[in-house]
Amino acid sequence: MQGIERSAASVEEAIEAALAELGLSEQEAEIEILQEPRGGFLGINASPAVVRVRPVPPAPGTPAAGSGGPVHVIRPHDMDDVEEVPPADVSDEQADLAADFLEGLMEAMGLDADVEPAVVDGAVYVDLWGADTSEGMGLLIGRHGHTLEAVQELVRTVVQRQVEARCHVLVDVEDYRKRRRSQVVRRARDAARRVAKTGRPEGLDPMSSYERKLVHDTVAEMGGLETASEGEEPNRRVVIRRLQ
Image (cartoon, rainbow, N blue to C red; front, side):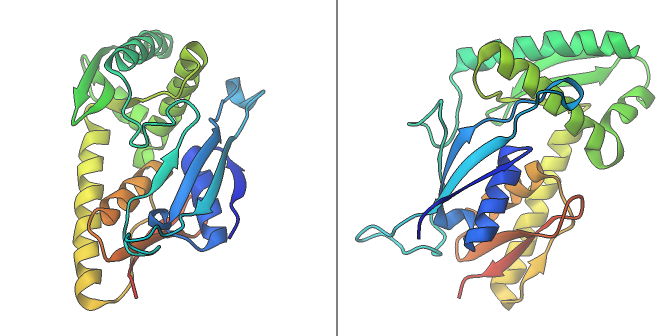
């Protein structure tokens, strides 16, 4: 089977579209990011993410496709680093750029917030903490984190344009994203264990593309299971199935 190219607003959405069309799980695919998304101000001059997805041919002596092996992701700027772990100096530079931008954004929005870069579990964050009240921070998070995701995309665009490389920095507001990440991973593991035991597929609640990627990666580590995203935004969700 030949690979296909698909585009979308984010890398994760483009990958999901290609996987769905090919009928593959992430564990069965080689994914090459041809173009990172670039968001113009208010959508002007924006360009989408473009990916190429193809099945991974089973090598002699290795598990066949569908056996729960690792997903292969190839990116233009880190061809030899499929786990996408950025060099420390690159992360520091990106964190500083993101922090400077967020400080200006908070001032423009009239929000009194402390901006603090941090590294947690190997991920680079720029944390926002309300100096006086959490009301403004709650507005910054938004319903189900939608406003936070918009801020994340804005920061990603600004940083990528300055460093001309993929932005590895995650924006968090009073640990909302970290708490949510732990919840998503825990629920994914619990659901995966139930599916492995009963053999009945199980769909999780609708999630953002970032959280769906967390589910895909978490389930892939457990083996014997596969995941697929189903539905349309904003109700797109991950379904976990036991491999036949």
